Image 1: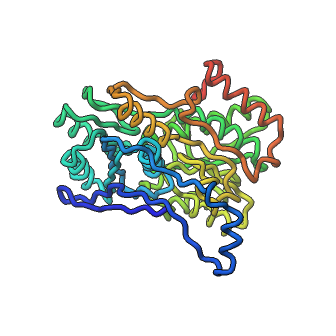
Image 2 (image 1 turned 90 degrees about the horizontal axis):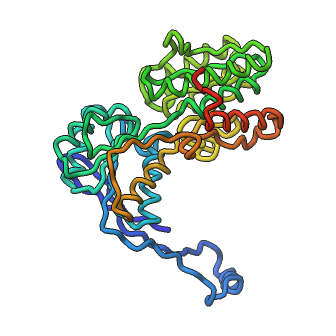
Image 3 (image 1 turned 180 degrees about the vertical axis):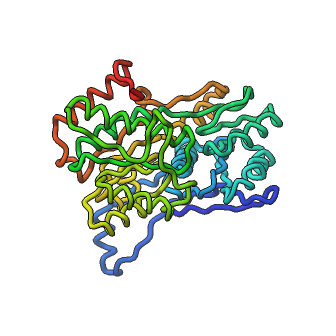
Length: 371
């Protein structure tokens, strides 16, 4: 598939809108092999995949201070946009924010482009998207990890990340040979500490059940104190130093919450000569970043792509949009832990069974992931 894109300037912001999708084939093999290829795939059975019928609907997104290829929450939302473009035939556009100063003009660029829905990605845009929604009451907005300040045309999207992180914490404690695990975050905000708290209580649940002491470094939910590197830039040097310190203290499972910190964390593990592993966040990191897979025990997925697609589909196809809160949890598959992949045979079946029981208990309310 060859994908052509057209870039245009609106209000000083660079906006990338999806253009024409062309399906075709190329041949790079020797000419003498072409006959064999023709025999293997008879012309009468060759099928050309067709794009979805185009809908008159423009779905737009504005990133947090990172690109839409951040291997984290910005990219997860963008994946949902691309899915909507491919499967529904909607048009899409996006504006990337290099700093907080870009938030308001990028949102205004999308207003000027007459987007049918504008998705603001991340907690940091919450103030600006509320201002934009209030100034444009006839337009529809979505805030991911944010909230509405009384704007009926602004749909908040949130996640109970403590639920999947609880499972990840329990698994981390069970897997750890040192029984020391660590978590650290980008910023001390609810969207980050929700992961960290769930992880803490999951690890402590393993301690309570087995009688084996587990030390959790980096976050104390009762005191609301922990370690943070101060932003969401990928593979932050301060984050790497925190990881190195935790490894020195005996941690062999690390859970960094704040985008792609896995390259830096893996470097710290290698430099320490340690057998440590990491737990991914937001996306299925072992799957989406196979270069990290040998070090990713599992991931606590925040499935923003699915929510993005569902919201666009309901609006573009069914005409439904409201300011009602969307909350992703284990029950609606808005979050979960990822498969174990290369680590699957290193995890006892009894632990897998217990994780399934804990998941069911969280869903039915018999297990509190924050206690």
